[in-house]
Length: 183
Image (tube, rainbow, N blue to C red; front, side, top):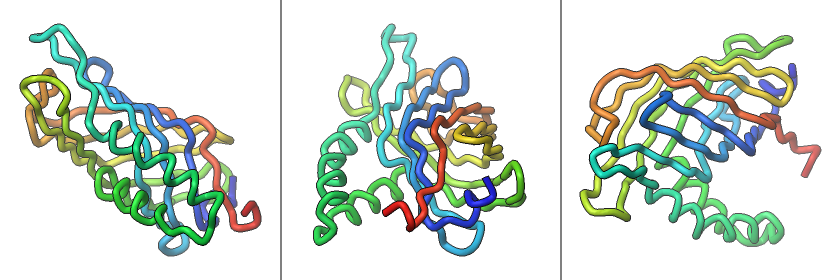
């Protein structure tokens, strides 16, 4: 686990967070090392649902469609290093859902703190709404599992999710560093 805070790239194939009753996000997170212990992470694929009891439905965010279109491009880029389309995909992920993360404890069981925001647009149903939430996180990394507690503020009323502060909890499975020696 010591290497987690020292490798250049970190990937989390499956990340899940929720505030229990009205906001659920399942996604893929990856990041790039800026300096030792400091990373810039982005959610490169997400399945985001916000409940709407007034219409008796859940809303799926538009970012899901954007990532669904861009995801095959990123896979192609992975197998074709001469192509650079993955940079456009990565930029989109970082603009929609960035997090700046710093490892405050790097030995044995790494602990990090992070700040960032999440955005989305629920465009596929009538009464379209935007979503914008700033968050501060505390993460504890165990072997291949990350546990997250996040305190956040929602700036917009998005269906059942109203403006204000909320506590989110998350679990990330298969959280591991991707070192240069793996490429």
